[in-house]
Structures are given as C-alpha cells and as structure tokens.
Length: 407
Image 1 (cartoon, rainbow, N blue to C red):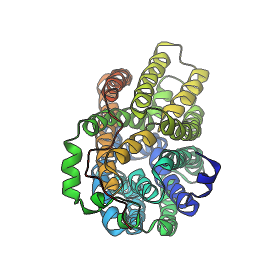
Image 2 (cartoon, rainbow, N blue to C red):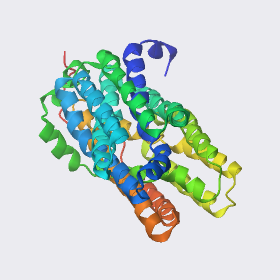
Image 3 (cartoon, rainbow, N blue to C red):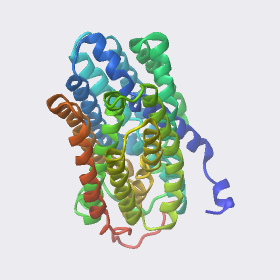
C-alpha cells in the first residue's frame, strides 16, 4: 500500500472503531483474573465459572449475525449504543449477583451479547464499507490490533483494580467504561447503503446472501476452521491464570503472560493485515494453526518455568488474533460488503461455538480429572485439522453478473 493510499484512509472512522474494539475486547479477555477471587468469595467451583464464560462466548457468537444484520440495515451506531447497555448491565450483575444464575445471566449472556454488538464483525464491516478493497486487509489488521491492545491494557488494569478495590468493585469500574462506546460510535453511524458496493450487492436480500454463502464451499470451510480458533484462544483466556497457579508458577506471571499475549497480539495482527494483503490468505491461515499446535506442544512437553511461560505468551500473542484480518478479508472478497456484518457474524458464530466448548470443557474436565492437559492436547489436534481445512479454500469472488458501481 502506497503512502498516498494510506493518507486517503478515513482515519476518524478507523480511530473510533479501534477504540471501541479496545473497550469491547478488553474486559472479556480479562475474565480469567476474576475466577479465583470470585470463587473463593462465593464458594462456587470452577465448573460454575467455566459455564458462565462458556455462555458468554456462545451468546457472543449467536448474537453476532443478528447484530451484524441490524448494523447492515439500520446503522452501526444504534447497535453500538445497545452494546453499552448490555455490556454494562452484564458486568454489574456479575459484580453484585449472590447466586450462580446472576453470574450466568450477567457475566455470561448479557456480557456476551454486549461483546457481540460491539464486535469485530460490526467494526470491520463499517471499515470495509469506507475503504477500497486493496486497503481492507491493512485496516482489518489495525482494528484487530486495537482489540489486542484491549487485552494488553485490561490485563494489568483488571488485576490492579482487583488488588485495590476487590473483584466486585473492579467489575463495576469496567461497567462504567462501557458508557464510552456510544460516543465513540458516532463516526461509524452509517449502514451498508452508505458504502461502496456493486448494484448486484445492493439488490441482494439478507436471505439470498445467506443462501449463497452457505452454498459456497470455501465459505463453509472457513466457518469450520474458525471453530478451532475460538476453542484455543477462549480456553487460554479463561483458564490460563488458574493453570499457572496449578503448576506452581507465581500469580504475577498470569498478569504478565496475558499482557504479553495482548502486546504481541498487536504486532501479530498488524503483520497479519499486511501479509494477508500480499500473500494467499488461506495458506497463511493454515500456517497460523500449525504454528499454534507446535507452540502448545512444546510448552507442554518442555520444562514449565517462568521463562517458558513468557516465551509461550509471546509466541501465542503473535498468533492470537492474526486469524481475524485474513478470515474477514476472505469473506469480503467472496461476497462483497453489503451483508458483511451478517456473514462475518456467522463465521464468528462458529468461532464462539468453539469458544463455548473450550471454556466449558476446560472447567468440566479439570473438575473431573484434576488437570487441564486433556483440553490442551485436544486443542493441538484441532489446530492440525484446521490447517487441513483451510488449505483448499479459494480466494476469489463468487460469480455474479457484470455490474457497474452504484452511484
């Protein structure tokens, strides 16, 4: 991308969207820090917390196609304003709830819907409508890096708030931050009709777009592979702090490791945006999944020390959300931007089904066997399967009648 094309980018939209990504991704990525103090205070077990986080990921996934379709039709700002209400309410219920149902509804369902309504699908669709096709992978990488920055910022922030005020009040502070999302969403207030599309895209209904996508082999393969991404990263996000404590690593390394994942995730996401613009996205995705499986295998079979935790966090950070720019870029290439919020949301739905299973199995199998090892090794195997699934994906648009750009 040339310097001239970079200067023509809609930077107000990009900056606002990036700040929303930071705020929406940050608190949910720090949920693992609340597990042990909450369970100690309430007397619940890890399965209870794991189910809440699993519900959160499932609600996030189920909500994304719905909120994406709403944003495509009615505009991104309305959906982002809804996110502030859902997200803030969920964190508040999680903070004050005396029984598990409050945790499951608040920290699980409402927070999940809050993330869904301010998710990458909403933000990236807004970006895609306002930039040229040759700029999309680059700006997708910027937005993904911003979400990564949320993890980097909220890991130490959450632990600091917990240390200073306790876990309950820390959640209330984060709930208050969600009120910034509607303000930041103002520059993203357009809908799909305000973007750059072809006439064929404009005339296609949501149902027609859905039928077209689900009948397209490469899209189905992309959905299948993204399930694995969710399984792997959600398990680590929710259970890694507890895992480190189990193997005798000082608790400070939990904060350090998640902050490192967040920081190097920024680098990995930006690099992914550039690489995806220049090279084959399906092959790059296959490489990412193989690299994750290798990293986890080495972490498990080599001596586990504070140094190995740091190295593992750095490597996983580089690979963490690097899947997002090429995955969303492929959806935009295949089908255009008219229904990108919805179609990207469906891809993320399968990601979140994987997240649900990764988080829930982490808690369930730990309580049953007293170790997280079965879920670690399952993630390794699934990573290799994902690499095979991405290999035959074709990076090309679906055939459509020749049209001229809409005025």
